[in-house]
Length: 172
Image (cartoon, rainbow, N blue to C red; front, side):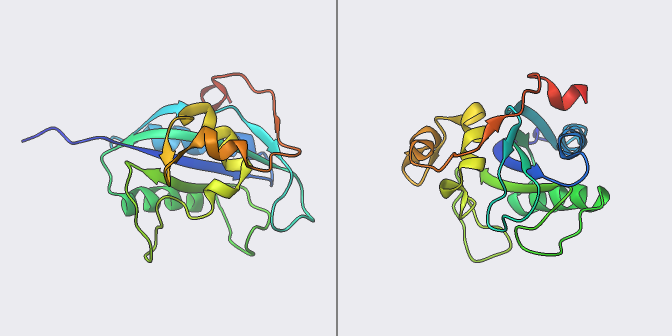
């Protein structure tokens, strides 16, 4: 029997209710504890002004790189399962949340029209995604431009490093 093939995916994590940094750390540890996922890179944590719906608390955001044997939709299901286990409730779009995990990219796959669009359809216009993603994958190409190139044109006003150590997701 052949060894399973691991493929690289990137995830965006965020939240602004309760202790979102602890929630992101717990989500990453849960993913990393699975036999079919390995967290290989984690960005710094950023404090981000709310986006879309602005009358709420600041968010904390991070990105992670994972190696996985899961198919893209199965990785999405794993992330949604972690959100559910952590009591994520979806009340309003862009509203307050304890934890949010988005599959941003998956091994260069481009797909649309289903449950999971890849790459994430709005990621290249969001500084709060691009800034942490550049920490772990600045040369990753999305739509013929690197993450670093997308970041140069992104609105990053008010986004700041939240000051957690490099190993924050393991130590919280």
